[in-house]
Image (cartoon, rainbow, N blue to C red; front, top):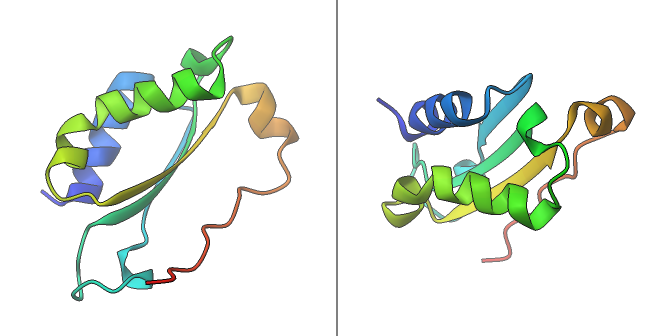
Length: 99
């Protein structure tokens, strides 16, 4: 199973999101072809209601602790409540790799 699929499965199980995107951005970095080292996550879940951004990120990082300790080098996390998602005009763009 791919790392991307493992991340998707774990986030679905932990947060029951109404929207989830797991984007492999490894190709934008200096890594071998077909790497799975850099990801962007966009997740909308009711479980984020009433939580500050830092708590949301801790929850996601905790859920993906195994992947982060075993090959995932970078994880861009974008967490939203349903209300925030409805008001959002766009998801922040990931900056280009400077390496």
